[in-house]
Image (cartoon, rainbow, N blue to C red; front, side, top):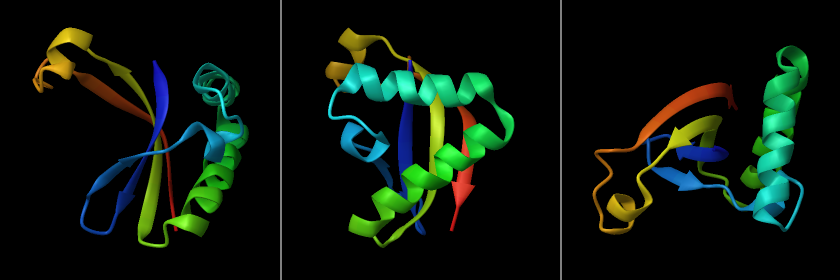
Length: 95
């Protein structure tokens, strides 16, 4: 699954709410990210910068935004075990 993560200058990670991506719906936001990543290149980079600007307007300490593809064992994750989670950065943009 693709999603957006934001990071502050100390590396603290935050999940980016769907509304910053362009939809109040989680699956629609995921589809927007997936579409930009699939088209790649300038479009993916431009969409990353757009989401970064939206998110940063409310979270000024954020210095980086990433679109990632993550695979998670949902039961383990909900039990606090993230060792079975794998994330790969697909697109990254910074201030």
